[in-house]
Length: 204
Image (cartoon, rainbow, N blue to C red; front, top):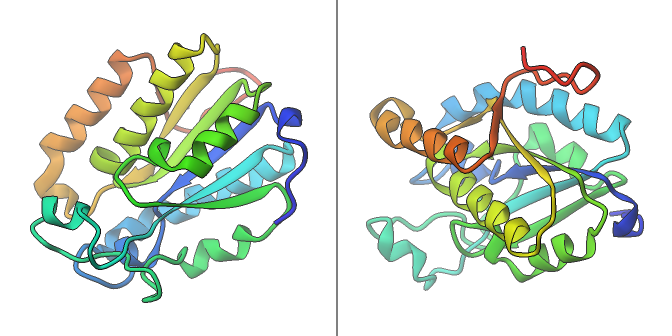
């Protein structure tokens, strides 16, 4: 990983939990989440061309992680199993320039100490784009935590969640949760966008 001085970055793309344990294999994996990968690749390439920081969030647990109890005891993304690794389609971007990977042991990437330090040191950040899974859990929890962090420190940073690059496992049966998560994010000033064009500042 080759990351510049964090003060030089004005934009950041966060890819949340696009790991094998949610997309490829395991008790919480749903291959249908793969439908958002092509759009994510577009956004990664766009972020790279603009020299923005790219952050891969990787759900990573031990077998005794307390989070498992809240998800009906379903063990997922256990360290060393491969479930915690970024899916192959995106892994090719993980070790590129301007890219960093951060493991988390909760549903919110804001609770990962390494991520908090990253945000604290990215003092000139003006825009954050977020993609990944799961919409109603890890994307939602991390996004709201980030928005609250920026408010607490009076940092004027635009947060965009890309509606065409997020998904949830078993989404058809979780639609009420997904809709509620999107509504709550919008109510808190997070922009839900599709095909956002920075040149015109418009959504398509």
